[in-house]
Length: 112
Length: 112
Image 1: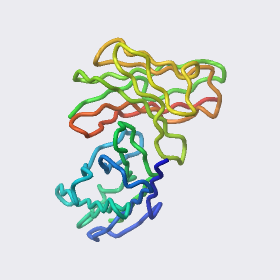
Image 2: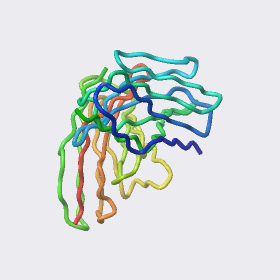
Image 3: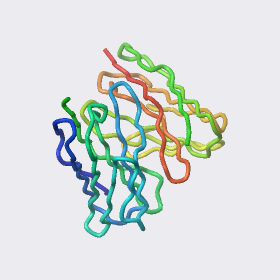
Image 4: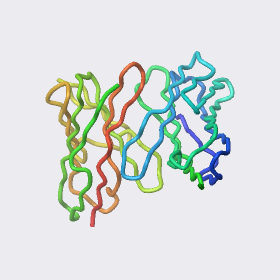
């Protein structure tokens, strides 16, 4: 059974700092990995999707990497802003399945 | 991408009653997914709903407790039956386009 772990559970940084969020998964037989942000009272917003054959994806100030063999992914946020404050979720889709297995998330606070 | 709406956005219900949550998508999709997010926990898949067939439930979830309808390719409902306080959660529907999953804003349910 796939298990997804996100470290740290919470993170507080001053505005402008670069930061890294970590995600690890136990079963390397994945189809893809997706990073989301969740804002209070709102649903999930898809940030980046990395296919199992890819090493990284970039969108603006966000960069996600994937090391499937070691079961790890990182989300790098450059020049953080207060608007980046949210909970970031990592989700893995298993090979041959549509089900996403989620981590518990990292709650990020960017202090002005 | 997809735009997903859910009704109601939140509700407070009494123990023993039932609540039906609606999910509407702006495009036709084959599969729709229902997730639950209990307080402080990660998202867990309840079931997958295909149009024209019975929903497929994940381990720990049963049709009598969470009946699902899928009358057409843009709409689905999830009913939470005979509710107890343990059913207090956020319920989210999602769809997939080009390997990316998109989520609705969620329904926050509180059972007293």
